[in-house]
Amino acid sequence: MERLYLPAILSGMAITMSHFFKKQATISYPEMKRPFAPVYRGQHVLKRDENGAERCTACGLCAVSCPAEAITMVAAERKPGEEKLYREEKYASSYEINMLRCIFCGMCEEACPKEAIFLTDRMVPTDLKRSEFIYGKDKLVEKADQRIDISKRQTKEVIAFKQNKNLQHNILK
Ligand code: SF4
Ligand code: SF4
Image 1: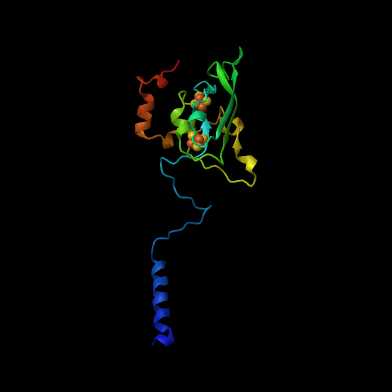
Image 2: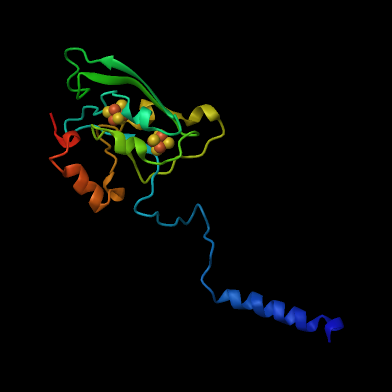
C-alpha cells in the first residue's frame, strides 16, 4: 500500500480540504486591512492649540528622551505679530524626525510638557528613497483646517493622567 503512495496522497488531500473550512489566516492586503490595536503607535503629529497656533516650544525634551536619537530641531524666538502662529515665545523653526531610526516607542509623546507631539494610528508610508523618511514640519505639523484625531489611541488612564490638574505639565498658561 505504501508503494502505491495512495494513503499518503489521500491523507495529504484530507489535510488540504480541511483548511477550506477553517478561518483564513491571511488577508488580501492592501485591499483588506486589519483593524489596529487601540494602542498602536504610528506616525507622529505636531499638534496645534485650539486657536491654531503650534504648541511645540522647542524645549528639546522629546529629543533627549528619544532612545533612537531620531529627533532634531532648531529653536527660534517668536517675533511680535507671530502670536497666532506659535503658542509660546520660543518655537521650533525646524523639527525633524528620522522615521528610519524611530522605533515608535512613544517616549517623545510622554516627555512632551506641552501636549505638542503625539503618535497617531496612521502608518508611515513606504518609499524608495532614504531621504523621504526624514519628516520635517511640513509632514508633522497638522494642518489648521485638517486636525488629526489623536483620541483613538489615548487610553482612559492616559487621558486621566493628562487631565490631572495637579501635575505641572497640565497647567495651561
Ligand atoms: S517614538 Fe520613540 S524612537 Fe520614535 S521619535 Fe519618539 S522617542 Fe524617538
Ligand atoms: S514636541 Fe514637546 S517635548 Fe518636543 S520640543 Fe516640542 S514642546 Fe518640547
